Image 1 (cartoon, rainbow, N blue to C red):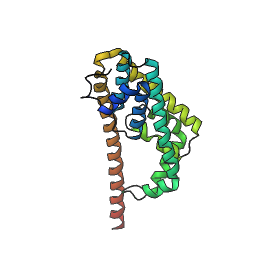
Image 2: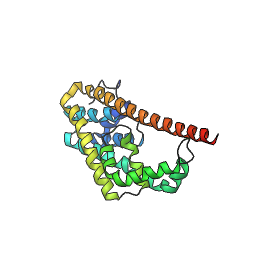
Image 3: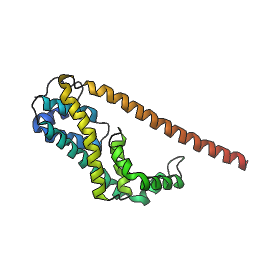
Image 4: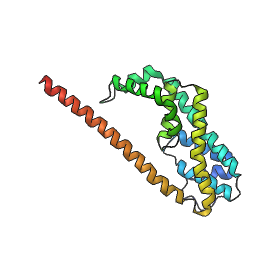
Length: 212
């Protein structure tokens, strides 16, 4: 049984693993894909720790968490496909500082680099979930999407499941390293967004000055 971890992992996650074993870890990871605030960096090493304690086979933990990742990603792909390009453009074009040409540039970028985005995106916090939506909007080939998502998820999950397994009672150490990684990614994203907004505002101000 998994004990003394409620301070780090939400109770329902530990209950799922206690009750269902490896499939419970898969359900938790599927939910994490759909609701990114849930902590995959806690769920995955915790599954490895549970395997080390004999609560589930190690390979089953890896297989089920990867299946959960793919299931959640496929659901978001479907949401993107249902949303479609026209609705996406209509919604995005109403956002402040966003113009249709920006959206078209993003579309062209995704058509050229979408396979790499889906594969490597599975290893980047926050983007792990959201990268599936543009893949659905652009109707990326489902077999290609599934292959890339499975491989990317397998690599990401294996790192954390095996880390939790090897660290045993010290599995929580993994979360500290991931927290630093996540903060770097979020800081880089915030910087990129800030530069985009600053550039857009400066261009708008320059246009108004010329008209004046």
